Amino acid sequence: MAMRKRDDEVFPNAAGIDVGASSHWVAVPRHLAEQAGCEPVRELGAMTDDLHALAQWLLSLGVDTVALESTGVYWIPVYEVLEQRGLTVWLVDARQLKYVPGRKSDVLDCQWLQKLMSLGLLRAAWRPGNEVCVVRAVVRQREVLLTEQANWVQRMQKALVQMNLQLSEVLSDVMGMTGQAIVRAIVAGERDPQVLARHRYGRIKASERDIERALTGNWREEHLFVLTQALAMFDTLAQ
Image (cartoon, rainbow, N blue to C red; front, top):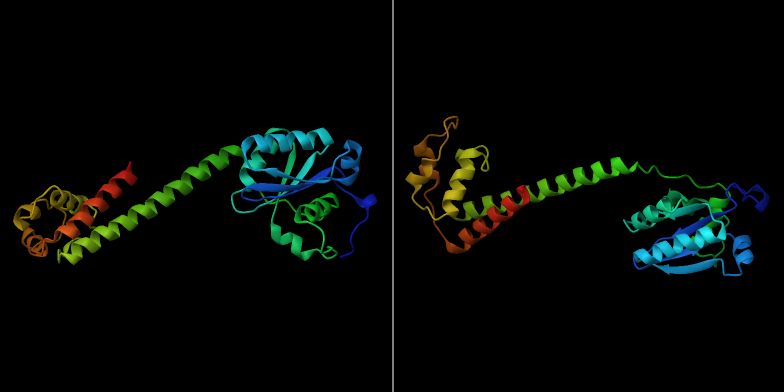
């Protein structure tokens, strides 16, 4: 692919930002920097006031479009602040930069990003609208919590098995109505298998006698402690 010349620039007033965890490197068009009497490359911090200072600097130079690397989650605050300040922001996959020939060894990532953006050689990644972002964040968080809940259920099952309480052998769902009632009774201090078996709900295939036999085990304090902690975490995540 032949590199286009200045006359072929599609976005002559575009900037490029190499996003980092604690700071961001920014490159602006050389002609805008020369007009303002400043260097075309600048490092700015990642704090919110730094981002607003970045936006103000770009606007003061006449930058109208910004190419932003989609690095981890660090790009999100930068994207949001720049967009709020009226700049057109292109979210760019960093892998795109590797497939364009002609880069010199002494060129910084932000400069290469700015050059490719100005020449129209980059493609913007899809960024959903604000409402979609809100819904997506909530859905993802729910998935995370459900996964963590399932992990705590596994810890409860492990603690029960270590005490040879074979609840999973008589119940298809240890955290169903019957299973939860039994586990909560155990955590509350009940140890009598016959009393625990009375928490059986009508639709359970196993009889009270089957459940009683499954709950005749070796009550050890360390495993009861784990069971109690796991149930507390399960309940916390369910809130």
